[in-house]
Amino acid sequence: MDYKDKKVLVIGMARSGLAVAKALRTLGARVIANDIKTGEQLDVVVKELEPIGVEWALGVSPDGLLDRVDLVVISPGIPIDAPFVKKATTMGIEVISEVELAFRLCKAPVTAITGTNGKTTTTALTGEIFKAAGKTTYVVGNIGIPFAGIALEAHEDDLVVAEISSFQLEAAPTFKPKIAAVLNISEDHMNRHKTMENYIDLKSGIFKNSADSDLVILNKDDPLSAGLAGRVRAKTLFFSRTQKLQEGAWIEDDSIIIDVGRGRERVCKIGEIFIPGPHNLENALAASLLTRAFGIPTSLIAKVLRVFKGVEHRIELVGTVSGITFYNDSKGTNIDAAIKAIESMTAPTVLIAGGYDKGSRFESLIDSFGGRISHLVVLGQTAEKITECARDKGFQNIYRVDTLEDGVKKAFSLALPEGNVLLSPACASWDMFKDFEERGRVFKEAVKVLGEEKR
Image (cartoon, rainbow, N blue to C red):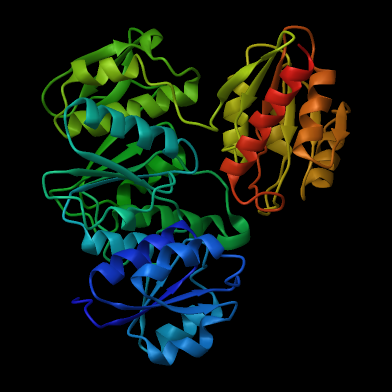
């Protein structure tokens, strides 16, 4: 599409909407910037877009704007079944996601990674391996940098590594990454997707347009990820932490072994991988397979695996106060992610959990406590739900707080000597915070303040 003088309605003016508006204005489109929030609430966005000239439609529903536009671009926070989206479709107006627009504009090949958990770490690690090989690499998507923000500057010889969420795949009809990976699938976002079948279908959308020349990577150990193989038209490779494979990436003799059709190659010993935990071993396997399939030498992959320290807000070591170690896992926004964080703890741990209710059940979270979790501090919208579930399971050491700052103080007072405090909410952050990053920053600041008080 030639976007010059096209009238485009951009709905949702957070990070992705801002990037879309800028890209479209660069191409000469006439942009209407819409958000249910007011100009006062979006003061920073307004100041950033004012110089490039957009039409503002803030604090209003987009329904009345549809008959004026040629295209609608929605942010990930806008569900595909929203009434105005259905209305636009009925009117014959195409509705696409920010990721779809970026893909249409981008000349660089795309490596796309999705999954319920691990996708941020795997995306960041994959990007670091490509960069270590001297490739100009853009790491974008759900990781926090909108794809649309770099789509016009990426060249054919560059690489784009994109973390893709199910929300971003809802309106991406032509999205076609060169390499697509589905790391795992477990229950999440049921308040939006309604059923697991819908959620699985959306995740598989990352490779729905794949061709023979493309590659799809799946997790042999995850039944739902591995089960997608029958839907794939492209070449498929698996990775596994528990099984020896004929091709793909697996563990053998305590080493990562890869075969992408060039014979067996040893990457490194698993003990050399810097980031801890079995879930991170899976992330390392996936990133190693992705990059080796692209032609990156195993020696370079191993070099990065030995030094990569993970991502902020994902089982991030914050510090130690009076012998108690604090971990920030604010990105643990679903139950499976929180379980993986709990399994990474090697000392008695006080867990801080709770937040926005996505319709999840918490039985498996409580079952994962074993002897690791000594006390549970709950907060947010799901506090009572988690408390009831824990008590039904016979776990009684539960304490409720109103703020995360109070949660840090309470957890510290409950922690056993040389023990841990882990923030891994198992819930989204939107009941109390703008996003999981803000929640993580508040947690880290509270730990810092506590440390200063205890000096």
